[in-house]
Image (cartoon, rainbow, N blue to C red; front, side):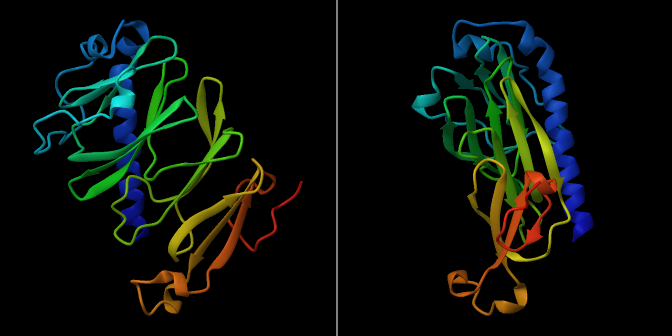
Length: 241
């Protein structure tokens, strides 16, 4: 299972990196007056291997995205705060929904493809960047960090594991990415305690007899904090320096 998860994570990260490298140079060097014009700056054909899906039409973007983004069959073009164009390849997505905006800076949406699914996070700061993060990120109270915890039984998610990212004025950087998380069921982030500590929980598999209603089972508690390098630790007390 770990090998399968690691392989899928590596492919997802490599795919996102290739797509970003393929379109970053023209996107950051050009500006556009409208999202429709911006789309002309993106490639017409897919770049990622196996990038064609059965979907023939562009992804349908919500009306609240219309001032900053447009879609073709294989790409979403996003206008950034520096009036650059960020091209995000969508050829591997069959379906996309739950389009959202966070803190007037980040955009995000769920996607599904062939034996895969995930969540695309888009940063419109600077010249922009995007990243496949697996699931909707959980932002800290001041939006200075976001965290992810994803553990699926099939390991078909765009990301499998636990990660914390630090947000800066014009980008983000990982503070911890842990793919070998304890093998427990229904992992979730329960809450932030300030901006420097997370409370998480999960259920041991042997405790579950009815998978249709996990709310009846006692959850094991974990914390992860900046003081401890964001390592997952059993308990409910945040680490201190």
